[in-house]
Image (cartoon, rainbow, N blue to C red; front, side, top):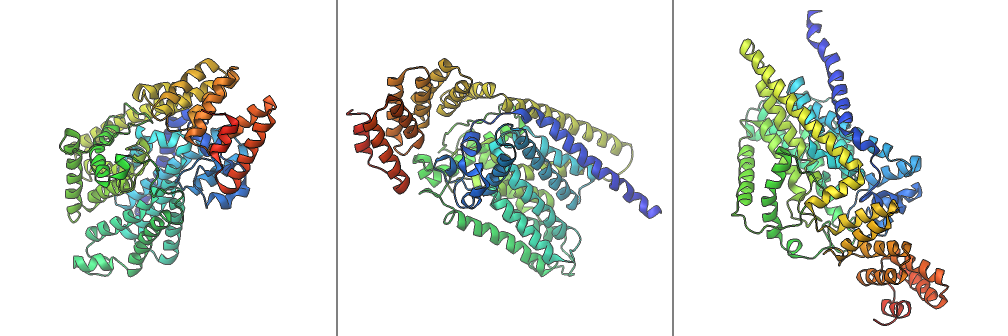
Length: 566
Protein backbone atom coordinates (compact mmCIF):
# COMPACT_ATOMS: atom_id res chain seq x y z
CA UNK A 1 0.00 0.00 0.00
CA UNK A 2 2.83 2.37 0.90
CA UNK A 3 4.50 1.66 -2.42
CA UNK A 4 1.35 2.79 -4.21
CA UNK A 5 1.03 6.15 -2.47
CA UNK A 6 3.70 8.05 -4.49
CA UNK A 7 2.00 7.06 -7.76
CA UNK A 8 -1.50 8.17 -6.78
CA UNK A 9 -0.91 11.94 -7.24
CA UNK A 10 0.42 11.32 -10.74
CA UNK A 11 -2.82 9.58 -11.67
CA UNK A 12 -4.80 12.70 -10.81
CA UNK A 13 -2.26 15.46 -11.35
CA UNK A 14 -1.36 14.76 -14.98
CA UNK A 15 -4.96 14.92 -16.26
CA UNK A 16 -5.58 18.04 -14.17
CA UNK A 17 -2.43 19.71 -15.51
CA UNK A 18 -3.39 18.83 -19.08
CA UNK A 19 -6.93 20.11 -18.53
CA UNK A 20 -5.59 23.34 -17.06
CA UNK A 21 -3.16 23.87 -19.94
CA UNK A 22 -5.91 23.23 -22.47
CA UNK A 23 -8.41 25.60 -20.87
CA UNK A 24 -5.81 28.31 -20.39
CA UNK A 25 -4.82 28.08 -24.05
CA UNK A 26 -8.43 28.04 -25.25
CA UNK A 27 -9.25 31.15 -23.21
CA UNK A 28 -6.14 32.93 -24.48
CA UNK A 29 -7.17 32.31 -28.10
CA UNK A 30 -10.91 32.68 -27.61
CA UNK A 31 -11.12 36.16 -29.25
CA UNK A 32 -9.94 34.64 -32.53
CA UNK A 33 -12.73 32.05 -32.69
CA UNK A 34 -15.12 34.49 -34.35
CA UNK A 35 -12.49 35.81 -36.75
CA UNK A 36 -13.71 35.80 -40.38
CA UNK A 37 -12.03 34.45 -43.48
CA UNK A 38 -9.57 37.04 -44.79
CA UNK A 39 -6.10 37.61 -46.19
CA UNK A 40 -4.81 34.33 -47.75
CA UNK A 41 -7.97 32.54 -46.61
CA UNK A 42 -9.45 33.85 -49.86
CA UNK A 43 -6.89 31.85 -51.88
CA UNK A 44 -6.67 28.83 -49.61
CA UNK A 45 -10.40 28.31 -48.96
CA UNK A 46 -12.99 30.82 -50.15
CA UNK A 47 -11.96 30.87 -53.83
CA UNK A 48 -10.06 27.60 -53.96
CA UNK A 49 -12.02 25.12 -56.06
CA UNK A 50 -9.81 22.23 -54.89
CA UNK A 51 -11.27 22.35 -51.38
CA UNK A 52 -14.87 22.88 -52.45
CA UNK A 53 -15.41 19.20 -53.21
CA UNK A 54 -13.98 15.94 -51.91
CA UNK A 55 -13.84 14.80 -55.52
CA UNK A 56 -10.57 16.74 -55.80
CA UNK A 57 -8.61 14.77 -53.19
CA UNK A 58 -6.28 13.25 -55.79
CA UNK A 59 -5.65 16.70 -57.28
CA UNK A 60 -4.98 18.11 -53.81
CA UNK A 61 -2.11 15.63 -53.37
CA UNK A 62 -0.64 16.39 -56.79
CA UNK A 63 -0.77 20.17 -57.00
CA UNK A 64 0.29 23.35 -55.26
CA UNK A 65 -1.85 24.85 -52.51
CA UNK A 66 -3.17 27.76 -54.57
CA UNK A 67 -3.75 25.92 -57.87
CA UNK A 68 -7.45 25.72 -57.04
CA UNK A 69 -7.56 29.52 -56.92
CA UNK A 70 -5.73 29.81 -60.30
CA UNK A 71 -2.69 31.31 -58.57
CA UNK A 72 0.75 29.95 -59.33
CA UNK A 73 2.85 28.86 -56.39
CA UNK A 74 5.22 26.23 -55.04
CA UNK A 75 3.66 25.58 -51.64
CA UNK A 76 2.76 21.90 -51.18
CA UNK A 77 0.67 21.19 -48.06
CA UNK A 78 -1.96 18.62 -49.07
CA UNK A 79 -3.00 17.60 -45.55
CA UNK A 80 -3.88 21.21 -44.83
CA UNK A 81 -6.02 21.35 -47.97
CA UNK A 82 -7.68 18.03 -47.20
CA UNK A 83 -8.76 19.34 -43.80
CA UNK A 84 -10.11 22.48 -45.47
CA UNK A 85 -12.05 20.27 -47.89
CA UNK A 86 -13.56 18.26 -45.02
CA UNK A 87 -14.52 21.39 -43.10
CA UNK A 88 -15.90 23.00 -46.27
CA UNK A 89 -18.04 19.90 -46.81
CA UNK A 90 -19.41 20.26 -43.28
CA UNK A 91 -19.96 24.02 -42.92
CA UNK A 92 -18.74 25.70 -46.11
CA UNK A 93 -17.79 29.28 -45.36
CA UNK A 94 -21.00 30.13 -43.47
CA UNK A 95 -19.00 30.13 -40.24
CA UNK A 96 -15.29 30.16 -39.46
CA UNK A 97 -15.63 28.86 -35.89
CA UNK A 98 -14.92 25.15 -36.67
CA UNK A 99 -11.79 26.15 -38.61
CA UNK A 100 -10.51 28.15 -35.63
CA UNK A 101 -11.49 25.53 -33.05
CA UNK A 102 -9.64 22.78 -34.91
CA UNK A 103 -6.55 24.96 -35.15
CA UNK A 104 -6.54 25.73 -31.42
CA UNK A 105 -7.16 22.04 -30.65
CA UNK A 106 -4.16 21.00 -32.76
CA UNK A 107 -2.02 23.62 -31.01
CA UNK A 108 -3.11 22.26 -27.61
CA UNK A 109 -2.40 18.71 -28.80
CA UNK A 110 1.11 19.73 -29.86
CA UNK A 111 1.64 21.31 -26.43
CA UNK A 112 0.50 18.11 -24.73
CA UNK A 113 3.10 16.13 -26.70
CA UNK A 114 5.78 18.58 -25.58
CA UNK A 115 4.60 18.07 -21.99
CA UNK A 116 5.18 14.32 -22.30
CA UNK A 117 8.51 14.91 -24.03
CA UNK A 118 9.65 16.89 -20.98
CA UNK A 119 8.48 14.10 -18.67
CA UNK A 120 10.24 11.48 -20.79
CA UNK A 121 13.44 13.50 -20.56
CA UNK A 122 13.26 13.29 -16.78
CA UNK A 123 11.76 16.66 -15.86
CA UNK A 124 9.32 16.99 -13.00
CA UNK A 125 5.61 17.47 -13.48
CA UNK A 126 5.61 21.23 -12.76
CA UNK A 127 8.67 22.04 -14.94
CA UNK A 128 7.16 19.95 -17.76
CA UNK A 129 3.90 21.87 -17.46
CA UNK A 130 5.81 25.15 -17.53
CA UNK A 131 7.64 24.15 -20.73
CA UNK A 132 4.37 23.17 -22.43
CA UNK A 133 2.77 26.44 -21.27
CA UNK A 134 5.60 28.49 -22.80
CA UNK A 135 4.98 26.78 -26.14
CA UNK A 136 1.21 27.13 -25.90
CA UNK A 137 0.89 30.69 -24.59
CA UNK A 138 3.81 32.65 -26.03
CA UNK A 139 2.41 35.52 -28.14
CA UNK A 140 4.68 34.77 -31.08
CA UNK A 141 2.59 31.63 -31.68
CA UNK A 142 -0.57 33.67 -32.29
CA UNK A 143 -0.09 34.10 -36.02
CA UNK A 144 0.09 30.35 -36.61
CA UNK A 145 -2.90 29.60 -34.37
CA UNK A 146 -5.33 32.52 -34.83
CA UNK A 147 -4.91 32.83 -38.62
CA UNK A 148 -6.92 30.17 -40.47
CA UNK A 149 -4.38 29.93 -43.30
CA UNK A 150 -1.71 29.25 -40.66
CA UNK A 151 -3.17 25.76 -40.05
CA UNK A 152 -0.13 24.02 -41.55
CA UNK A 153 2.12 24.94 -38.59
CA UNK A 154 0.06 23.45 -35.72
CA UNK A 155 -0.96 20.55 -37.97
CA UNK A 156 2.64 19.59 -38.75
CA UNK A 157 3.69 20.19 -35.13
CA UNK A 158 0.83 18.02 -33.85
CA UNK A 159 2.08 15.00 -35.80
CA UNK A 160 5.79 15.79 -35.50
CA UNK A 161 5.75 16.35 -31.74
CA UNK A 162 3.76 13.15 -31.26
CA UNK A 163 6.57 11.34 -33.11
CA UNK A 164 9.15 13.09 -30.91
CA UNK A 165 7.23 12.09 -27.78
CA UNK A 166 7.41 8.45 -28.89
CA UNK A 167 11.10 8.79 -29.70
CA UNK A 168 11.95 10.28 -26.31
CA UNK A 169 10.21 7.36 -24.63
CA UNK A 170 12.24 4.64 -26.30
CA UNK A 171 15.49 6.57 -26.74
CA UNK A 172 15.50 8.14 -23.28
CA UNK A 173 13.22 6.03 -21.14
CA UNK A 174 12.45 2.35 -20.84
CA UNK A 175 13.00 -0.13 -23.64
CA UNK A 176 10.05 -0.89 -25.90
CA UNK A 177 9.11 -4.53 -26.34
CA UNK A 178 7.42 -4.21 -29.73
CA UNK A 179 9.85 -1.74 -31.26
CA UNK A 180 8.80 -2.57 -34.82
CA UNK A 181 5.19 -1.48 -34.28
CA UNK A 182 6.44 1.54 -32.36
CA UNK A 183 8.76 2.51 -35.21
CA UNK A 184 6.00 2.07 -37.80
CA UNK A 185 3.66 4.38 -35.88
CA UNK A 186 6.44 6.94 -35.42
CA UNK A 187 7.25 6.86 -39.15
CA UNK A 188 3.56 7.26 -40.04
CA UNK A 189 3.36 10.34 -37.81
CA UNK A 190 6.43 11.80 -39.51
CA UNK A 191 4.91 11.22 -42.95
CA UNK A 192 1.70 12.96 -41.84
CA UNK A 193 3.79 15.89 -40.60
CA UNK A 194 5.73 16.08 -43.88
CA UNK A 195 2.53 16.21 -45.92
CA UNK A 196 1.26 19.00 -43.66
CA UNK A 197 4.08 21.53 -44.15
CA UNK A 198 7.47 21.52 -45.85
CA UNK A 199 9.52 22.49 -42.79
CA UNK A 200 8.46 19.28 -41.01
CA UNK A 201 11.67 17.85 -42.50
CA UNK A 202 13.30 19.11 -39.29
CA UNK A 203 11.76 16.32 -37.21
CA UNK A 204 14.11 13.71 -38.67
CA UNK A 205 17.23 15.64 -37.57
CA UNK A 206 15.55 16.38 -34.23
CA UNK A 207 15.12 12.65 -33.58
CA UNK A 208 18.76 12.09 -34.54
CA UNK A 209 19.84 14.79 -32.05
CA UNK A 210 17.70 13.07 -29.44
CA UNK A 211 19.56 9.80 -30.06
CA UNK A 212 22.96 11.47 -29.68
CA UNK A 213 21.90 13.29 -26.50
CA UNK A 214 20.53 10.02 -25.13
CA UNK A 215 23.86 8.32 -25.80
CA UNK A 216 25.70 10.92 -23.73
CA UNK A 217 23.07 10.92 -20.99
CA UNK A 218 23.10 7.09 -20.69
CA UNK A 219 26.67 5.99 -21.50
CA UNK A 220 26.18 2.51 -20.00
CA UNK A 221 22.90 1.67 -21.69
CA UNK A 222 21.08 -1.64 -21.66
CA UNK A 223 23.90 -3.32 -23.55
CA UNK A 224 26.44 -2.48 -20.82
CA UNK A 225 28.95 -0.78 -23.14
CA UNK A 226 30.84 1.98 -21.35
CA UNK A 227 32.87 3.15 -24.34
CA UNK A 228 31.14 6.27 -25.67
CA UNK A 229 31.99 5.68 -29.33
CA UNK A 230 30.59 2.18 -29.16
CA UNK A 231 27.56 3.52 -27.30
CA UNK A 232 26.81 6.10 -29.98
CA UNK A 233 26.56 3.44 -32.62
CA UNK A 234 24.87 0.71 -30.64
CA UNK A 235 22.55 3.02 -28.67
CA UNK A 236 20.61 0.55 -26.52
CA UNK A 237 19.45 -1.72 -29.28
CA UNK A 238 20.35 -1.76 -32.92
CA UNK A 239 16.67 -1.51 -33.69
CA UNK A 240 16.64 1.98 -32.19
CA UNK A 241 19.41 3.10 -34.49
CA UNK A 242 17.41 1.69 -37.37
CA UNK A 243 14.32 3.67 -36.35
CA UNK A 244 16.37 6.88 -36.19
CA UNK A 245 17.84 6.07 -39.61
CA UNK A 246 14.31 5.67 -41.00
CA UNK A 247 13.34 9.09 -39.62
CA UNK A 248 16.37 10.71 -41.26
CA UNK A 249 15.71 8.83 -44.49
CA UNK A 250 12.13 10.11 -44.58
CA UNK A 251 13.35 13.71 -44.18
CA UNK A 252 15.98 13.30 -46.91
CA UNK A 253 13.50 11.59 -49.23
CA UNK A 254 11.02 14.41 -48.68
CA UNK A 255 13.59 17.02 -49.71
CA UNK A 256 14.24 15.08 -52.93
CA UNK A 257 10.52 14.76 -53.66
CA UNK A 258 9.93 18.46 -52.98
CA UNK A 259 12.52 19.59 -55.53
CA UNK A 260 11.39 17.05 -58.13
CA UNK A 261 7.89 15.52 -58.03
CA UNK A 262 6.33 18.19 -55.82
CA UNK A 263 8.02 21.17 -57.47
CA UNK A 264 5.45 23.33 -59.22
CA UNK A 265 6.79 25.93 -61.60
CA UNK A 266 10.38 26.85 -62.37
CA UNK A 267 11.47 27.92 -58.88
CA UNK A 268 13.03 25.42 -56.48
CA UNK A 269 12.23 27.56 -53.45
CA UNK A 270 8.95 29.08 -52.33
CA UNK A 271 9.24 32.19 -54.47
CA UNK A 272 9.73 32.88 -58.17
CA UNK A 273 10.92 36.45 -57.63
CA UNK A 274 14.27 37.36 -59.14
CA UNK A 275 16.26 39.88 -57.14
CA UNK A 276 19.60 40.24 -55.40
CA UNK A 277 18.41 38.30 -52.36
CA UNK A 278 16.98 35.30 -54.21
CA UNK A 279 19.99 35.11 -56.56
CA UNK A 280 22.76 35.22 -53.93
CA UNK A 281 23.25 32.42 -51.41
CA UNK A 282 25.83 34.51 -49.55
CA UNK A 283 23.40 37.40 -49.17
CA UNK A 284 20.67 35.06 -47.90
CA UNK A 285 23.02 33.58 -45.29
CA UNK A 286 24.24 36.96 -44.01
CA UNK A 287 20.62 38.12 -43.88
CA UNK A 288 19.67 35.11 -41.75
CA UNK A 289 22.46 35.90 -39.29
CA UNK A 290 21.33 39.52 -39.06
CA UNK A 291 17.62 38.81 -38.60
CA UNK A 292 18.35 36.61 -35.57
CA UNK A 293 18.15 39.96 -33.77
CA UNK A 294 14.57 40.39 -34.98
CA UNK A 295 13.66 36.88 -33.88
CA UNK A 296 15.17 37.55 -30.45
CA UNK A 297 13.06 40.70 -30.08
CA UNK A 298 9.91 38.79 -30.99
CA UNK A 299 10.68 36.16 -28.36
CA UNK A 300 11.85 38.39 -25.51
CA UNK A 301 9.52 41.38 -25.98
CA UNK A 302 6.63 40.52 -28.34
CA UNK A 303 5.04 43.95 -28.31
CA UNK A 304 5.21 44.66 -32.05
CA UNK A 305 3.51 41.67 -33.64
CA UNK A 306 2.53 42.21 -37.26
CA UNK A 307 2.28 40.06 -40.37
CA UNK A 308 3.86 42.18 -43.08
CA UNK A 309 7.55 41.94 -42.23
CA UNK A 310 10.06 44.12 -44.16
CA UNK A 311 11.70 42.51 -47.18
CA UNK A 312 15.19 43.78 -46.50
CA UNK A 313 18.45 41.91 -47.06
CA UNK A 314 21.63 42.44 -45.03
CA UNK A 315 25.06 42.06 -46.60
CA UNK A 316 27.27 43.33 -43.76
CA UNK A 317 27.86 41.12 -40.74
CA UNK A 318 29.98 43.72 -38.97
CA UNK A 319 27.03 45.63 -37.62
CA UNK A 320 25.29 45.44 -34.24
CA UNK A 321 22.68 42.99 -35.52
CA UNK A 322 25.27 40.97 -37.43
CA UNK A 323 27.53 40.63 -34.39
CA UNK A 324 24.51 39.68 -32.27
CA UNK A 325 23.58 36.94 -34.76
CA UNK A 326 27.12 35.59 -34.86
CA UNK A 327 27.11 35.60 -31.07
CA UNK A 328 23.89 33.55 -31.01
CA UNK A 329 25.34 30.99 -33.40
CA UNK A 330 28.56 30.83 -31.38
CA UNK A 331 26.63 30.18 -28.17
CA UNK A 332 24.61 27.46 -29.94
CA UNK A 333 27.80 25.82 -31.26
CA UNK A 334 29.42 25.99 -27.82
CA UNK A 335 26.31 24.52 -26.23
CA UNK A 336 26.19 21.62 -28.67
CA UNK A 337 29.88 20.97 -28.05
CA UNK A 338 29.02 20.46 -24.36
CA UNK A 339 26.49 17.71 -25.05
CA UNK A 340 28.55 15.23 -23.03
CA UNK A 341 28.17 17.44 -19.90
CA UNK A 342 24.68 18.86 -20.48
CA UNK A 343 22.90 16.55 -22.94
CA UNK A 344 19.38 17.87 -22.34
CA UNK A 345 20.32 21.56 -22.51
CA UNK A 346 22.36 20.91 -25.66
CA UNK A 347 19.36 19.05 -27.06
CA UNK A 348 17.13 22.09 -26.54
CA UNK A 349 19.65 24.31 -28.37
CA UNK A 350 19.98 21.76 -31.14
CA UNK A 351 16.21 21.50 -31.55
CA UNK A 352 15.82 25.28 -31.75
CA UNK A 353 18.40 25.75 -34.46
CA UNK A 354 17.46 22.55 -36.30
CA UNK A 355 13.91 23.90 -36.55
CA UNK A 356 15.35 27.16 -37.91
CA UNK A 357 17.26 25.40 -40.71
CA UNK A 358 14.50 25.70 -43.37
CA UNK A 359 14.65 29.49 -42.95
CA UNK A 360 18.42 29.92 -43.13
CA UNK A 361 18.18 30.87 -46.80
CA UNK A 362 19.79 27.91 -48.55
CA UNK A 363 16.56 27.74 -50.56
CA UNK A 364 15.02 31.12 -51.51
CA UNK A 365 11.87 31.88 -49.54
CA UNK A 366 8.99 34.29 -50.02
CA UNK A 367 10.01 36.45 -47.04
CA UNK A 368 13.07 37.45 -45.03
CA UNK A 369 11.57 36.45 -41.68
CA UNK A 370 8.06 35.86 -40.31
CA UNK A 371 6.53 35.36 -36.90
CA UNK A 372 5.13 31.92 -37.63
CA UNK A 373 8.57 30.68 -38.65
CA UNK A 374 9.27 30.59 -34.90
CA UNK A 375 6.44 28.13 -34.26
CA UNK A 376 8.62 25.00 -34.57
CA UNK A 377 11.78 26.54 -33.02
CA UNK A 378 9.69 27.34 -29.93
CA UNK A 379 9.83 23.60 -29.19
CA UNK A 380 13.53 23.88 -28.38
CA UNK A 381 13.15 27.18 -26.55
CA UNK A 382 10.28 25.87 -24.41
CA UNK A 383 12.33 22.77 -23.53
CA UNK A 384 15.32 24.94 -22.57
CA UNK A 385 13.21 27.14 -20.30
CA UNK A 386 11.64 24.03 -18.75
CA UNK A 387 15.15 22.74 -17.98
CA UNK A 388 16.06 26.02 -16.30
CA UNK A 389 12.83 25.85 -14.31
CA UNK A 390 13.55 22.23 -13.40
CA UNK A 391 17.00 23.11 -12.08
CA UNK A 392 15.61 25.92 -9.94
CA UNK A 393 12.74 23.69 -8.76
CA UNK A 394 15.32 21.22 -7.50
CA UNK A 395 14.98 18.03 -5.43
CA UNK A 396 16.60 19.36 -2.27
CA UNK A 397 14.72 20.22 0.95
CA UNK A 398 14.72 22.84 3.69
CA UNK A 399 13.46 26.40 4.02
CA UNK A 400 15.81 27.76 1.35
CA UNK A 401 14.50 25.16 -1.08
CA UNK A 402 10.89 26.11 -0.29
CA UNK A 403 11.57 29.82 -0.79
CA UNK A 404 13.35 29.09 -4.07
CA UNK A 405 10.43 27.05 -5.32
CA UNK A 406 7.95 29.74 -4.38
CA UNK A 407 10.05 32.41 -6.11
CA UNK A 408 10.44 30.23 -9.22
CA UNK A 409 6.72 29.51 -9.36
CA UNK A 410 5.77 33.15 -8.77
CA UNK A 411 8.07 34.53 -11.46
CA UNK A 412 7.06 31.83 -13.94
CA UNK A 413 3.33 32.32 -13.42
CA UNK A 414 3.72 36.09 -13.73
CA UNK A 415 5.50 35.69 -17.07
CA UNK A 416 2.93 33.18 -18.33
CA UNK A 417 0.01 35.40 -17.34
CA UNK A 418 1.64 38.37 -19.09
CA UNK A 419 2.23 36.22 -22.18
CA UNK A 420 -1.36 34.97 -22.25
CA UNK A 421 -2.72 38.53 -21.89
CA UNK A 422 -0.64 39.60 -24.90
CA UNK A 423 -1.79 36.52 -26.81
CA UNK A 424 -5.41 37.29 -25.95
CA UNK A 425 -5.03 40.85 -27.25
CA UNK A 426 -3.28 39.74 -30.44
CA UNK A 427 -5.89 37.03 -31.07
CA UNK A 428 -8.51 39.78 -30.87
CA UNK A 429 -6.66 41.76 -33.53
CA UNK A 430 -6.79 38.75 -35.86
CA UNK A 431 -10.57 38.68 -35.40
CA UNK A 432 -11.11 42.35 -36.39
CA UNK A 433 -10.24 42.66 -40.07
CA UNK A 434 -10.33 46.44 -40.36
CA UNK A 435 -8.32 47.00 -37.17
CA UNK A 436 -5.86 44.30 -38.25
CA UNK A 437 -5.11 45.90 -41.62
CA UNK A 438 -4.97 49.44 -40.25
CA UNK A 439 -2.58 48.17 -37.60
CA UNK A 440 -0.42 46.55 -40.27
CA UNK A 441 -0.12 49.87 -42.10
CA UNK A 442 1.55 51.38 -39.04
CA UNK A 443 4.46 49.00 -39.57
CA UNK A 444 4.31 48.54 -43.36
CA UNK A 445 2.96 51.80 -44.86
CA UNK A 446 4.06 50.88 -48.41
CA UNK A 447 2.55 47.39 -48.49
CA UNK A 448 0.52 46.95 -51.64
CA UNK A 449 -0.87 43.69 -50.30
CA UNK A 450 -2.27 45.33 -47.16
CA UNK A 451 -3.78 48.22 -49.16
CA UNK A 452 -5.35 45.69 -51.53
CA UNK A 453 -6.80 43.55 -48.76
CA UNK A 454 -8.13 46.59 -46.92
CA UNK A 455 -9.83 47.63 -50.15
CA UNK A 456 -11.37 44.16 -50.36
CA UNK A 457 -12.70 44.55 -46.83
CA UNK A 458 -14.40 47.86 -47.66
CA UNK A 459 -15.72 46.45 -50.94
CA UNK A 460 -17.30 43.54 -49.05
CA UNK A 461 -18.97 46.13 -46.81
CA UNK A 462 -20.18 48.12 -49.85
CA UNK A 463 -18.05 51.17 -49.09
CA UNK A 464 -16.95 51.80 -52.66
CA UNK A 465 -15.32 55.17 -51.90
CA UNK A 466 -12.88 53.67 -49.39
CA UNK A 467 -12.45 50.55 -51.52
CA UNK A 468 -11.39 52.61 -54.55
CA UNK A 469 -9.07 54.71 -52.41
CA UNK A 470 -7.18 51.73 -51.01
CA UNK A 471 -7.15 49.84 -54.31
CA UNK A 472 -5.56 52.91 -55.93
CA UNK A 473 -2.93 52.97 -53.21
CA UNK A 474 -2.32 49.26 -53.79
CA UNK A 475 -2.11 49.66 -57.57
CA UNK A 476 0.42 52.51 -57.27
CA UNK A 477 2.61 50.70 -54.71
CA UNK A 478 5.82 48.90 -55.78
CA UNK A 479 4.07 45.52 -55.60
CA UNK A 480 1.00 46.90 -57.39
CA UNK A 481 3.12 47.48 -60.45
CA UNK A 482 4.10 43.82 -60.70
CA UNK A 483 0.87 42.04 -59.66
CA UNK A 484 -2.43 42.00 -61.51
CA UNK A 485 -4.80 41.58 -58.57
CA UNK A 486 -4.92 45.17 -57.20
CA UNK A 487 -5.70 46.50 -60.69
CA UNK A 488 -8.35 43.82 -61.14
CA UNK A 489 -9.95 44.66 -57.79
CA UNK A 490 -9.83 48.37 -58.59
CA UNK A 491 -11.62 47.63 -61.86
CA UNK A 492 -14.44 45.86 -60.00
CA UNK A 493 -14.84 48.79 -57.59
CA UNK A 494 -14.85 51.28 -60.46
CA UNK A 495 -17.49 49.26 -62.30
CA UNK A 496 -19.64 49.23 -59.17
CA UNK A 497 -19.23 53.00 -58.99
CA UNK A 498 -20.36 53.37 -62.63
CA UNK A 499 -16.90 54.37 -63.94
CA UNK A 500 -16.68 51.82 -66.74
CA UNK A 501 -14.00 53.55 -68.85
CA UNK A 502 -11.58 53.72 -65.93
CA UNK A 503 -12.43 50.13 -65.03
CA UNK A 504 -11.52 48.86 -68.51
CA UNK A 505 -8.21 50.73 -68.29
CA UNK A 506 -7.41 48.88 -65.06
CA UNK A 507 -8.36 45.53 -66.62
CA UNK A 508 -5.98 46.30 -69.45
CA UNK A 509 -3.17 47.01 -66.98
CA UNK A 510 -3.92 43.79 -65.09
CA UNK A 511 -3.72 41.74 -68.29
CA UNK A 512 -0.56 43.55 -69.36
CA UNK A 513 1.05 42.42 -66.08
CA UNK A 514 -0.38 38.89 -66.28
CA UNK A 515 -2.09 37.96 -69.56
CA UNK A 516 -3.25 34.68 -68.02
CA UNK A 517 -5.03 36.28 -65.07
CA UNK A 518 -8.37 34.55 -65.65
CA UNK A 519 -10.29 36.66 -63.14
CA UNK A 520 -9.74 39.78 -65.25
CA UNK A 521 -10.62 37.88 -68.41
CA UNK A 522 -13.90 36.74 -66.85
CA UNK A 523 -14.61 40.27 -65.60
CA UNK A 524 -14.01 41.59 -69.10
CA UNK A 525 -16.38 38.94 -70.40
CA UNK A 526 -19.18 40.31 -68.19
CA UNK A 527 -18.44 43.85 -69.44
CA UNK A 528 -18.61 42.83 -73.11
CA UNK A 529 -21.71 40.70 -72.51
CA UNK A 530 -23.50 43.60 -70.82
CA UNK A 531 -22.59 45.85 -73.77
CA UNK A 532 -23.69 43.15 -76.30
CA UNK A 533 -20.35 43.59 -78.11
CA UNK A 534 -20.38 40.33 -80.08
CA UNK A 535 -17.02 40.90 -81.83
CA UNK A 536 -15.07 41.48 -78.62
CA UNK A 537 -17.02 38.74 -76.88
CA UNK A 538 -16.11 36.22 -79.60
CA UNK A 539 -12.41 37.19 -79.41
CA UNK A 540 -12.44 36.85 -75.63
CA UNK A 541 -14.15 33.46 -75.66
CA UNK A 542 -11.66 32.19 -78.24
CA UNK A 543 -8.79 33.42 -76.01
CA UNK A 544 -10.29 31.67 -72.98
CA UNK A 545 -10.68 28.38 -74.88
CA UNK A 546 -7.11 28.58 -76.08
CA UNK A 547 -5.87 29.43 -72.59
CA UNK A 548 -7.73 26.49 -71.09
CA UNK A 549 -6.42 23.98 -73.63
CA UNK A 550 -2.83 25.18 -74.10
CA UNK A 551 -2.10 27.43 -71.13
CA UNK A 552 -1.55 30.46 -73.37
CA UNK A 553 -3.22 32.48 -76.15
CA UNK A 554 -2.40 35.10 -78.77
CA UNK A 555 -2.23 38.07 -76.41
CA UNK A 556 -1.38 40.70 -79.03
CA UNK A 557 -4.26 39.71 -81.30
CA UNK A 558 -6.73 39.63 -78.44
CA UNK A 559 -5.62 42.99 -76.99
CA UNK A 560 -5.94 44.62 -80.43
CA UNK A 561 -9.58 43.52 -80.66
CA UNK A 562 -10.57 44.00 -77.03
CA UNK A 563 -8.89 47.34 -76.30
CA UNK A 564 -7.78 48.74 -79.61
CA UNK A 565 -4.35 50.32 -80.22
CA UNK A 566 -2.36 51.81 -77.32
